[in-house]
Image (cartoon, rainbow, N blue to C red):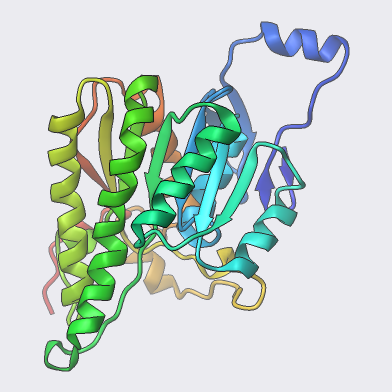
Length: 291
């Protein structure tokens, strides 16, 4: 059921609890856009989502919680993390940590605290990312390095420290890349290069870590996150009909779209899928456009 902006299950009691444990562990709930979706069953599983306090990361964390997973959300925005805790209604299956995942010691601590809390680690979602878009001749080396450190090196560090636990659990990794890894807009050299690196890192890790750990990626296209920000930055989406209709799917994307595929890729149903990055872009990367 929907509670505020979160998908949460009402805890059953008495006979309802007994009935709940006897039912098939796949459930249908309604998302924020009031569409029926079938949920995975991650009861007893534990995951980490980086950059999970806002935007796509929040959508992923919310979906995994709704599917029964215990989730550690790491983010560098303390205010957004606090709002996330409030929105989640105090569920003990959510833990948040203020962390800079470009720093090795903070990554080590993040993984350590997660395993200390729940005793295992089954899923890692590398979502954290930034963009600095400006003409290449104006892009400072420090800015280039900042984007690469956040979008690519942080993923390497997270995997490095998470892998021993993921291997033990025979878990999974989902890396959030971008359609900018596949096609470009002007003045996105640092961002595009970092996301291309994520795609390559994903298939390299899949070969190195399989079969114990599966590794996949997602390349989001235009995903509207204005209404998934902390309150101080939150904006209601305003899109023209042309914005929506340029997509073969007929609309702009939303975090729920990315979250749904993330949940599937982490589930046993995706057990024969590893090493691939999947565009979730409403069909834009297959559309031939000429001006």
